Length: 167
Image 1 (cartoon, rainbow, N blue to C red):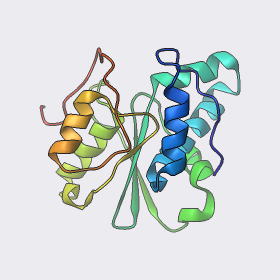
Image 2 (tube, helix red, strand yellow):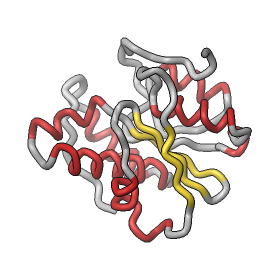
Image 3 (cartoon, rainbow, N blue to C red):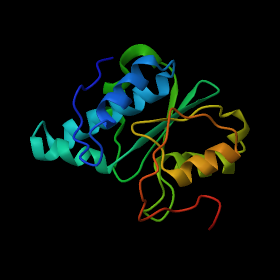
């Protein structure tokens, strides 16, 4: 799987180096798949324009593996099966893939997975959620509460956040 070497993250100049180093060192295939799905979705919907690719930082894809199934959610992108097929290729042929959409529009991708898997009584089988960018501090708190690992998080201000445990 090929990693994009440049991501336009204006808030912190060190973001690119930190994220690429973490992904390269990570043993988590889920993080790499999350990044690839987001990149495939943006390439399909925005093309390879500079403006379109700059918008990629507004979105996040989360991925986890549960009992031979792949669960995927996105903050605000409408994911299509072809995005996922292109991102994972034949590596996961035969696996069931579930695209999750939960919340009222402000639920972060990893929280959508938490809500869906909790309602399906599968949350206790999740040990890791991969994301295409660092979790926010609120998602970090929820993931820690459920003892679910993630690559890393940021402490930047979050304007909109929807709690999966309320509603």
